[in-house]
Image (cartoon, rainbow, N blue to C red; front, side):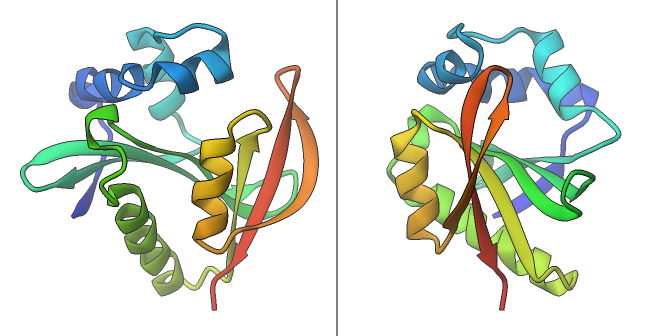
Length: 152
């Protein structure tokens, strides 16, 4: 498994992965499908590092990372999404664990993530990886549950 930076020429692959997860899109944006401009704005910006997850000769997911959130001076994972065809195969856990090792090598001592309050599948996933709830926050007229993991 490897992480490949998202570039303009890979946006069609990003869009396919995003749109394979209609339930999440509906939770986050109230629409099941996103546009190419949506993914361009979200994953090609100056604020985050965005990667395609490549495994077994195919792209299986996306991870988006903010090195330093100015509101709390902490690193945040903005999104970890696996293509719906590859759900429940352990790829999400493998991808996160490899990304966590990368963070540790870069001397990060913790990482945070915000989860849409209604997204129970995501809460179960992240808590199974050792993330602990610490706060509620408001984002885009919805409640986000904030979780943190110490990287020791």
